[in-house]
Length: 197
Length: 197
Ligand SMILES: [Zn+2]
Ligand SMILES: [Zn+2]
Image (cartoon, rainbow over all chains, first blue to last red; front, side, top):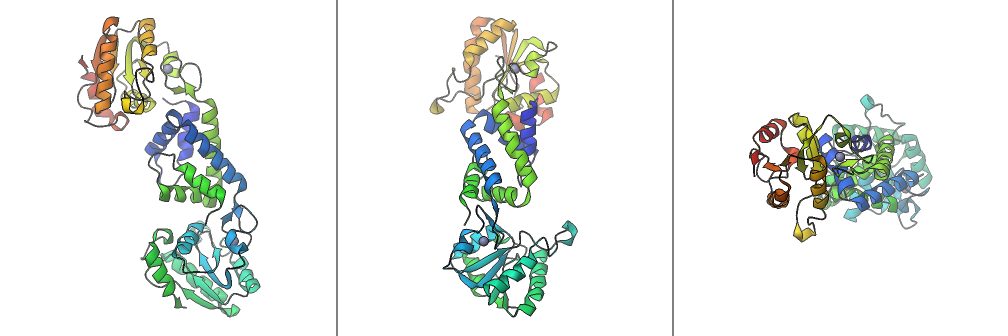
């Protein structure tokens, strides 16, 4: 019953996480029937983000310049490096106000079944960064999922020859939980109670 | 923690119905971190729909030409006109296979508090269409909400001088329910059991 461009918009909206056919249809019709200004804003914002967002040359987070704000900030403590799976995890840790060091974003976790190995996570780049910055402590803040734990142990082994202290977020992060949904207090406690590996 | 274009994308995604700040952030990061191709497809589809989708000159549904497929179809019975609130309602009724007439889309319902009166619903256009097509029966398929009922009664009064039979979908549509979410069997029954007003 819908014209080709509406059908294509419905299909295209299904790339969004958690959006099934019914809600994709609802979203498409809402944009076209009722919210021209909002739809225009979304179209422009998406185009602009796609054309401008790149990965930080140092930490691999999403940014709009060669170096992200945190990596470019001379006030941050370069001797401490916190390793996370995703950019949203940086936001969650920053919100605790408990960490003044720098980050490295894996953009995922080891998952051989999906073809994600050490190269995809930028682990060579991580080793170079640890050497260049003169990092003294690496805090592993991967998720406490099976894959997050495996990734954590892999990186801990990898960094042994580099003579840095390697710690892991304390238990407190709920088992199976995604880091970005952990509340700030729990995360702050987990960070303070991090244990050496 | 996020760069300006990412923040703007998160804000822009909140125009989508049912999307709060947490899921908008999740969607934005998903698009930028993991699904470049999907994000590109969505950007293109949205641009294309915004530039090409218009209202049908006859029935006011969303389409890409002067006249939508149903209004342009000479096989449809022009003596029966079904009045719905939204394009999605046409899809729901078509899916029952119980109606071969034409449609008119109000794009809403009477709602004085939101400034939606007879003009916004195109009711003058509706009267002209009823005369031009030589409509014999008008089926009122507005939602069975308070506003849907009020709109139904207003249109029934409006069409009295036109000497057409006016019917309303039978009870069967759940009270307070939005038409597009009613299952096909219930909707088919409601259509068959429509009662004269
Ligand atoms: Zn960076
Ligand atoms: Zn039409």
